[in-house]
Structure formats: structure tokens, C-alpha cells
Image (cartoon, rainbow, N blue to C red; front, side, top):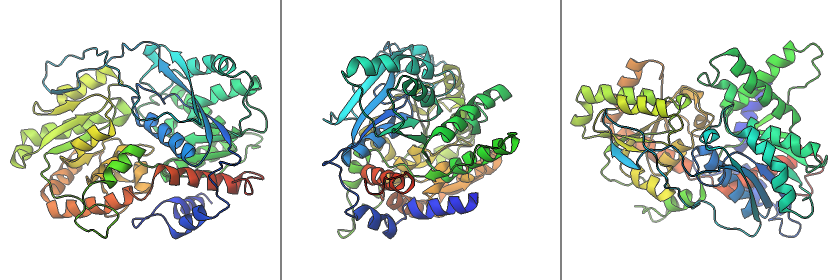
Length: 484
């Protein structure tokens, strides 16, 4: 049953290389799917990251969800966290790596460039201790968000909003929902939609002991069981959530908790990134999607936040080996490490391992800045052994950069399949070394992979994503078909 569910979800909702599936286009073009301007629905979205300073793909993805829902007519209230002080640990924006590098403090806080003001958007911010920021794990600010949520809503609105939906981003939003339900901010008629951006109980780095594993699995199960509809970003997390439900169902004495369906819904590129990639020149005037440009590329890129679960140390180790062997110099390539620092000790270990010629960028980049670097990149290595999706893989693909990932353990493999992405066993250093060297030398093959990946990446935008959400909700919530 699980395999059938996976197949059905992928077949119905995952876009194909030539664009969205005919079935999906037909569904979203029906008049029954309206912009909702006549009778707009109101929803509350709860997540740790939304306003600057962002530090992970979760923040970008949350903004994309909101942009899409606003674009099709919803009224959206966002309840999120923000560090109460701007003194966040960081190092200089861009520097050559050397073994005497010291992590510095930067007070340079970007303006919120990703989200434009919108008349139907209200943002409620709970200030949290800086020590809890730049984390999504059990040491994050989730308890502070829950503690401050009620006051934010009651002081902002004279009357309690009547929400049609509440969207929770990951397990960390569930405690806030429980408080709001207990205090009747969320009524019994408000549908609970659980958006799983990552199954934390799947991360070995986050679950080094049984206590950590049980912490995450308990809360993730609670979210799935309480939710009216649950979404995962890929088949990887869909299967994991089904398996975890099955295991706990088998272990429970009464077995009353039924196994609930988890829907796969692939995330879109952020809006400004999507638009800029579409504006790139094409050599085929009849094509709607630009081709991979013939330009000089010089970087081998790793673009992940610097925390153990993203495994950037593997990239550093590979680059050091290739540098020592003279392979990078022979191919005129330079390692490029992009990623915000979430764990200073781990970041220092990564930087100390990287070869001296490495270029490091440690701030959360705007779309334009990211595209500038990607334009000069020949290959992106995504070193995580598990990732719920890996949005940077889609962003690289949109600029014509192929990615190397660890088999199907990376969620982006739900979208990018054979011939559109490179897979290898990243648990073997030797296998990975050979794979990297082989592909760096095969320029024609890399261009072919990049072109296919680019077309796939640009087949899906935020409004189409939001309409897809809306369509699934219409099919699975009582009485919603006539409303959407």
C-alpha cells in the first residue's frame, strides 16, 4: 500500500521535463479553481523562519509557500521567530580559506529583500534569544515561539481571526498550534495542514542517541496524527513517515491510531530566482526555457549550511584530495564553499580541511548573488547523506549546473531523475573521488545533464505549487471541493 501511495503521488503531482503534467494543467485550469478574490480564505502559517535574518532553505521555502498562496488570492498571517539581537555569529562575507582563519562577528543584517509588502499579508514576529537562532533542531527557538504566540495574536487583532486553515512548518510548529487551540485562537473548524520540510528523526547526525530519536519521532508522529492533511517534499520523507507510523502502530497495544496518508508536493524555486533564470538568453528563439549558456566555468561548488547533518566536511575532504593530486589545478578549477554558519566548531573544521585556494561565502545570498556564482560553476556537490529535498540542487539546475548527490536519499531525486542528476555512493570516499574526477573531465556529458535538469527546474513556480496544494486539499478535506 505504501509503494502504491508513493507511485500515485509522484505520478500525479511531480512535474515532468517538458513542463507540468497534462493532468495537472487540466486540473488547475478548471474554473472551479478560482483566485478566491470573491470569498478569500484566511490562513495562519506557523514556522521558525520567515523574516530576515534567514539561515536555511526552510526560510526560503516558507516564503515561497506564502508567495504562492498570496498569488492565488489567500489572506495569510505568518507567525514566526526572529533573534532579539542582531549580534549573530558569522564570518566575513567572502574570503580565501587558510588554516589561521578565525570566526568573526558581523553585525551586517540584510533587509528583507525576498518578500515584498502585500495587502493580504500580516507578519507576527516573536523575538527569541540569539542563542536559539540558526537552529532547526531540539535546541532551536520552538519553545520561545510557542510561549510568545498568544500575546502576539491577541495584541495585534481586536477580534480573533477566523482561520480556515493553519499551516505548520515541521514538528517545531506543533507546540504553538496546541497552545493556540487550547486558548481558542484556532477553532475546531480550522483545518490543520502539516508541511514537513524535513523528517528530523531520519538524520543520524541529529539522533546520536535514543533520547534524540524519540524526541523527534514522537513530535513528528503527533503532527501527522493531529493534521487533517500532511505534505512531504519528496518520496524520501513520504516513505519514512509511512514507515514510522507503521512501526509505532505495530508497537501500540490498542493500535487505534490509523496510518494516515502523506502527500508528496515538490517545492518550487523562489520567485525572484525563477524569474531571473527565465530571463537568461537562449539560442533558440522558439524555446520558452533558455539553454545552458556556453560560458567559462571555474568553480566546484558546495552550497549547504554549515551544520553536521549537511556533511560539508565530506566536500572539504574531497576538494583537499583533488587539490593535493593536482586535479583541480590541471582542470583550472577552484573549490567554492557557500553556506551560513550554524555550528561554529563544525564550520572551523570544514574551513581548516578545505585547500587554501578555496573561496568561501558565508552569508545567506540573494537570488542575484547566487546566480552570479552559479554562472561560474561547473559542478555542485551536495554532500548530505540524507536531505528532505535540497533546494540548492534545483537552483543550481535552473542556472545550468548539474549536481552530484548520494543515491536516492536526497529528496530532489523525486524531481530530478536519470540523466538530470548525478548519483553515487558518498559513504565511500574512493567511489566519490572517482565519480567527481570522471564527470569533471566529461564536459559534453555534463552539458547534456545540465540542460535536462534546467528544463525540469523551470517547469514549476510558486503559484503552480500553491494551486497544487489547493487541489490536494480540495480532494481530501470534507466539503472543500465546492469551495476551491
